[in-house]
Image (cartoon, rainbow, N blue to C red):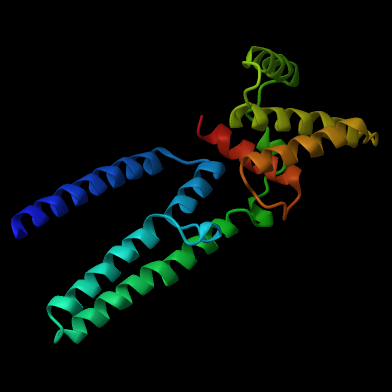
Length: 211
């Protein structure tokens, strides 16, 4: 029986290791803002009852603690150590991950690039108008736009609004830029706790850096 169980454990842990290797590869390639929050939510998500990889690992350790207590009742110190490890993963580590996910939606002012810096590598507005129109027209009916589409559209409208605002004529362009910026934040699942257009510039600067 022990060999069969050990084989199943080895197979299961090898599968988990392979999955974690794949995950590590994705992280090393680079994650944008939405991807970062998506990763952290899958590691620990208190909004869904504490689901994710970390709580599941904590459950494994708790189950191991129970098994030790049943089969080797005199190993109290072992049971205590396993329980503490499970609690640390589920509570301390999990809460820290949740804190990190929340902080990702709160860029410090120094992280907000100026429009000049954010759009230094941007194509001309005429070019982006054409790209945005073509991409919207080519999108299959009933499907959502990609993050790139919403990011580039928000950046385009922000640039147009900035031009109007520089000459003291904010109006429809500013309203459109604000709506597009908030739409990007919805796509990224980012809490609206900063100026949405600042967020667009930050994310556009990061996006162009990784192109």
